[in-house]
Image (cartoon, rainbow, N blue to C red):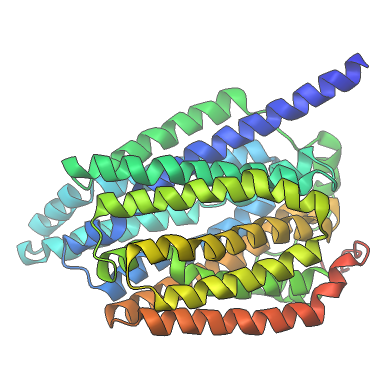
Length: 427
């Protein structure tokens, strides 16, 4: 009885620790998320360039996240989380120091290009952060290490609730800090990243056991390339899940990644108001992922939750395309964000259940690479359309993509209930 109690206590402590890691990380991210359009606009960036700025982080993540996932399989979750947070810390420093760095570079080369050098520094900071991205996918692998299949969806909901809480506090605080200057939220985010680094180093134990690491070390790791992604997509069970996630992220990312730009250009909100709206979205996501996911998974099968959430996302995207004021937008967010957040958690859980235990970190890295592809393409496309007053067109294109995804889900979703498939020989 005492052993069982100790195991439960140890399990709870680990979940609390990883919750705090993700919470602090996402609070820092939330500090700068509403900042980018307003910050970049100071230096004459166009909406399309702002979209590219958001996409630059994703493009770098496309290279970094899968590698982080595989490294965490080989060397443990804790050291990779440390490396990732170091990159985040450095990236935020470049973001905060972008104006003085821009002036220094301009004085060395051409004084007429201060804005260009400043924007370039902002891009560089986001790329550094992106190259070491992988916090979330490695945290998800950590949860998979310390939970069984029954509790995994609820465990991953812990990450979702930490993500949401970070977006309650981060954007609201970032909006307040921005009143003293747009660099201030970046420096605050850097301080949080440093605190996270200390917290992981001293308080987060390794979740990958010696036995499991030894098993992985004696196998050939999958190459973290598009070939590995193509191989994964051809697998009969995990492949449809990865494709489903890709289409959902492609449609939703255009809304989420450029929401601050949408709020600025369409709803005419300042940064403080945008931060409060994003905090509202964060609070709602905590309810969905921290409470709702647990209730749903106890009463319904994953397939039922996936199909229902897809329809909610479709309705929300249609509503977004028709939104012209803030009160309506606050209502539209309910099905839109609720459906997307639920799908994110349930599909991640389903992917971890569809592969062998020693593949989880690598497969989550591949999933993160797929997500990064959508975050690379969608923000630039959305920024271009929003810059040409295309909110209606963008919303309808995204809704149409989800409608096609619903048809795909009805066609392939039954594969989710198959037993875990063996790992292909070429992996």
